[in-house]
Image (cartoon, rainbow, N blue to C red; front, side, top):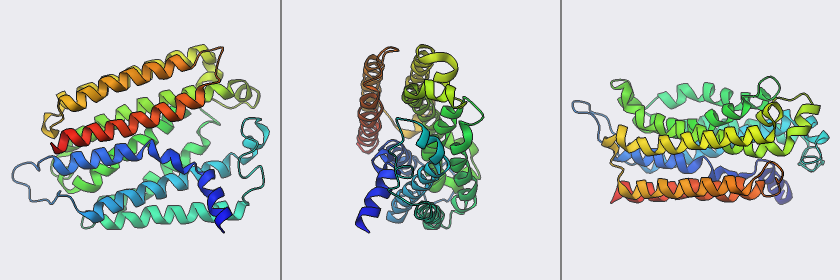
Length: 305
């Protein structure tokens, strides 16, 4: 049993939850600390069950999406030398085990939305959100924009967290969600950029397998330029967030964090060259983990001081 659990955690790369979860938590803190518009009687204060709900929904949704992706891609993974040792093609996990894990994770995600009642929006939106997350697994078969589909999937984390906390406010003030949308767009550009970098490893295989990706379409050099453009957009969106949404109260501490993020993204692109992709994993995991956790830390300090 313990071996199966270990393999399942490896299958979904549980440690990579660190990419989206910090942005969901940052959006939640923003939602808790931003005042409700005058005249509305809606409880947006911190509640432990809401924090628990965010954690349950994030883990459930991501686990379901990653396990489903491994199910859908098992034949492709078995043909790709880089991925042939993944759990399903290597025989470490059986199809029924992964299918049940996907179903249970999906159920956990949907059940977690009950913790936000009387806000009913998370319950209503849970099925469409889950279907969109699962749909990413097929994107590479018909569009080179699959990287941006993944970006939108992770961008839903801060947006959904905001809706979970302030959904009843949105029914009266739709623009209340603007801070979460700007943060989500920054996540979209950031994730799309580093996924393009990661996909450079499979550019030749994708062409041979007739799969769609930016590196297969533009070449590695062109893909890295597009990834750099995405990350420039990320920095612009992070920088204008406190300017367009002064009500959330982000100040110089957050601004200093954005400058550090700019340096980290510059370093990430310095690690990867068209003729040298040996440090892609360092750029993919180490740098991006620091970015997500770092923004959560500086944002939280700024908002709570």
